[in-house]
Length: 391
Image (cartoon, rainbow, N blue to C red; front, side, top):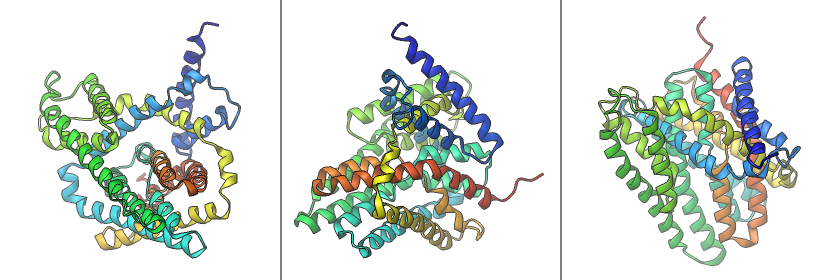
């Protein structure tokens, strides 16, 4: 069999698996994200190891494309109209969930005997979410309400808060362990955030004016692809966050491009094929056996993260005055966790080599659980917060 044949066959089967997951997801309570991740787990190294290496090598590139598309769509949720209606709630909820999660996880782990420096790092890691999974659960639900609008806004900015919190926790933990103020780590993180926003503005402002001129106010698919690839590529080249840059571009276009009728309609059309490959390959990369190595600390970390999300969502909902019915469900809807947490763990492991094994085992092991079960809980939360469908 010729060399390209196996990868092409595998990709064809993965697209059909995505079609099957979509069909099952629309007829059951199972999110298609969980189905695709489970499929990847079965065919990946933790399962039957059926994927050709040339397909698994696509994961880094596909993940950047898929997450960049999601970043654009999340940025588009931050329209001035949405911010006027839900801005206070989005800010209060996102900050509350991040701060309470950090406090609950860090304090809880410290009380059961985890060193304070490590507890702070793990608490900061717990603030990360998986925007792709949460966005897809919202999309699959087919429900539009104040709750889903606010949830999209929260997901669009909470990893930005989480990155700042993680940088501060890293500085503090290094000071506790080594007496090192760690100012360079904080400065680097602030430069990354500021640079990413600046890049998003530099791309988004001309794009807001130029796109959609050839098609009577509706951007072409090729324009959407071009912006996604350009933003992601420049972000990586400049060592910036393509998520923050993409969200900035999306927010700028949706607010500045008054001649657009459906600024991100075409992105929604081509996003799903990339998402299929992304979630299946993400599942294939998960190490299910890592769950066995997390031990009691891992179980405590997972339980405390759930508690922190629920408490933070309720507190933020109370302070921002959202409907009482919604308040218990923001935290559960924000449980999915993936790549950002792993990225934080890699950075923390480099800065704290003595704790590297513990950090990575917890990050990988609990990510498997939150990535597989989190979308299911998020789907239930959306349904409960919005209420039954009108018949």
